[in-house]
Each structure stands twice: as structure tokens, then as C-alpha cells.
Length: 255
Image 1: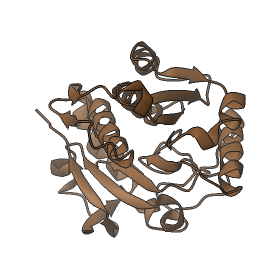
Image 2: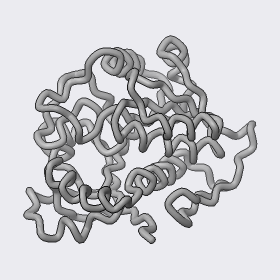
Image 3: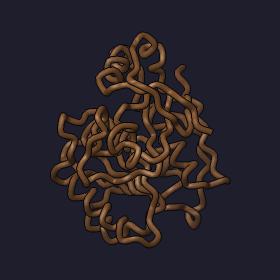
């Protein structure tokens, strides 16, 4: 059952995050744990338990190797890439997780955590030959840090274009989960070019960004899951831009 929630601009969300980040509140870990839980649910694994008992302590029952799905995580250079890598570390207990880094810059600590948990780094040629073998693709390339022109460039654009073309060829293809916002979609205007992976589900953090429901947003975002990471009090005094329907709201522990 959908719920109506307010929408905010990227600047409004960043301003709400800033005091929490300055106090050392682990927003990235909250987001990653919730993202991992949503992905687990999308994989529809009834015998697997992912219960958020703390910021970095989900209780996860190991999945037998023969039953493990494959998940591809696309990793950008910013916080979205960090969210995706920490989520990949959680998911490695229940899935075979590959990480494709699309930038020479990346969240070093998150990558080390993911690799230590068993996440495997892959290159684009490996992915291009095997896209149909993944159950899910997690798009963690770019979020609300998009510039006025949100178009992907360089290695990120090449990876998205190759995977997008594979998706368009049809057949059995993985679902796509976008981290915060589909990469290449402007968070305020919903403007994008064609180098964007259309998501089945967008897991957005803190607040629904206007771009998810404006312009090409409705076409590219799929079902929206709003993760409450604790921005509510900071956003109460902010005038929202509008309203949006979300598929569901996930609240993570804030203690």
C-alpha cells in the first residue's frame, strides 16, 4: 500500500544531513544496512533472515552455496558508492556479490570492508559477458551529488550503456535497484539523457528527491522505497517542494 510523503531538493536534503554528519552520525551505514535489507527482500529468499539490530550489525543466516543468487553492484566515487559497497558486504553472506568500480576514485574503507566480506571486484568485460546470470543489479554510481548536467561520463557511462543495451536485448534479465536515485537522473529536475539504467526499485535515503517524481523520474525510478535515516527533525522546518507516493517506508535504528 503506497503512502504520500513530501519531496525535497538535493540542497534541502544535504542541509538536513550536515548537522548529523558533523556530529558523527553514521548515515552511510544506516543507509547501507537498509539497502541490504531491501535487496534481500527483492531476492525473495524466505529462509534468510536480515534483521537490523544496529547500524552495522544485521543478523544474517548464511545461505547455502547452491542456493546463492548473484548480485552485481555498480560503484561510483561518492557516498552512493560507499552505501553500495557497505550493503554489498552485508549481502555477501547470502549472495555471490560482484562489484564493478566505474571510477578510479572510490570509498577506500567501504571497498576494504566489502572485499574482506567476500565481495569480488570485476571488470566490465566480465560483466558484459554475464549480465543475464545476475539476479539483481544495484546501481550505486551517482546520487544527489550530480552537477547541473547529470549525464554520466567516462567509465561510468560506458558501463551503464553496455548494461543498458544488454537489458534492451530482452530475455531473462536482472532487476535493477537504484541507490538513492538512478544514476544520471538529475535529483531536482528529473532531467536525464539515455545513459541511465531504468530501475525496478529506487531505495532513496532521508527524503524523496523531487527528481524521482519529475521529468523522467517516474519513468526511470520504478517503485520508491523511502529509508528513514533520521532526517525527519531537520526537515520539519523546511518547506517541501511537493508530494510523492512511495511503495513503502523503512525506518532504521537510530540509537
